[in-house]
Length: 73
Image: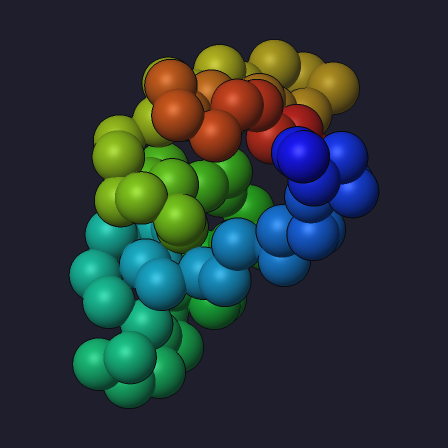
């Protein structure tokens, strides 16, 4: 007999990498990166540390990770 119960929900990915400089968030605070986030889009995927394809337009920005998809701001 097979188990047809739904799969457990996967928790949202926890950021392990800084989305601006690509370094580990466990290494300590990134005050310069935090300040820059107000003006710049993310450049690195916070889940897998891949460099993202970023497009900036007057209305905002989009950043695409090949593994985790698109983010907009």
